[in-house]
Amino acid sequence: MKIGMMGGWNTNSGSSFHAELIGKEWIESGHKLEIFTFYDYAFHGTAITAIDEPYVTRCFTVSSYIPPKLDPIPFLTSECEVFVTQDLGMLPKNELGKIFKRIKKRSKCVTVIHDGNLSKNPDFYQFEWDSVVCFDKRYKEFLEPVYGDKTCIIPYPCLPWNPGNKGNARRKLDLPIDKKIIFSFGPAAKHIIDIIPDIAELGKKYPLLLLIVSKEKDIVNFLKSCLPVIPIPVKIIEEIPDTNKLYDYLYAADALIFNKPSASQVVVSSTAFQCLGSGCPMITRNSNFAEYFDKEVMKFSDTDELKHQLISVFEEKEEYKKTLESARLYVNENSYKEIGRKFIELFKNL
Image (cartoon, rainbow, N blue to C red):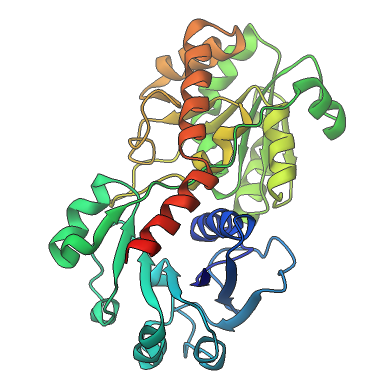
């Protein structure tokens, strides 16, 4: 099958991560893939994370770029049988709309919705999709009244279950062997500031290290300014790690902290889908970023629950073991291979 996909690629955004995972499975299964993605000067995300593959064409700007741009030639000369868009809200919709009828003459057209509510932009609704894909029933509830039976659920994909060796990872990264390492990374790392005093209380019983990996200047500068008053050791590494390096950090850590508060709309945590396969337990604030999950992550609503979850991890108690087993089962059921195949089944049935 010849598939064209338009959206983020090789950037540090959730929609790019989704596209890369299912795209990888399509290629591994023998399908031909063409990627149409953002120009490197106007993309969705904060960094380009890899060198583009030969099948990638950068040919449009993010929707907020003024004026938005799109080169129509790559789309019009493509021979794809299926055309997929990822995160339509970020794409130059009117520019795409001008050539959409030509694309639809030869291709089945599918959009993957990343928006957490119905868009108020009329440009969003100018396309006649053959299928509208969303991640779970929360999305379907607000999409179905607009798109009807074209709306379908295909869960967000995960990286495979692939735990690593903690000691080897710590030696590789030059991290202390004898400490309990609490890890946070990326833009979400800023939210760990609020719970540092709670974490620090456990430092009276456990030798702790707070590991922050982020290249967000406001986060890094703020954390550095706080270092003199933070009562536990903190190591800040300024980088945007690729998946392999991220998994090294996850292997080295005892726990991944995700303290992001609820958003005003439906959301999923691409961080969770990216990290669950590492075997590093994820301790997450009980916000709507985590409501998609049951026992695959450890949730906390207050200080006492946070400390309880950390102690469970440090001492490898039964709750910690059940969390890892639930995460393993979830990842195996929703690996990028399984989700990529579900998309192919959808395409064949259109």
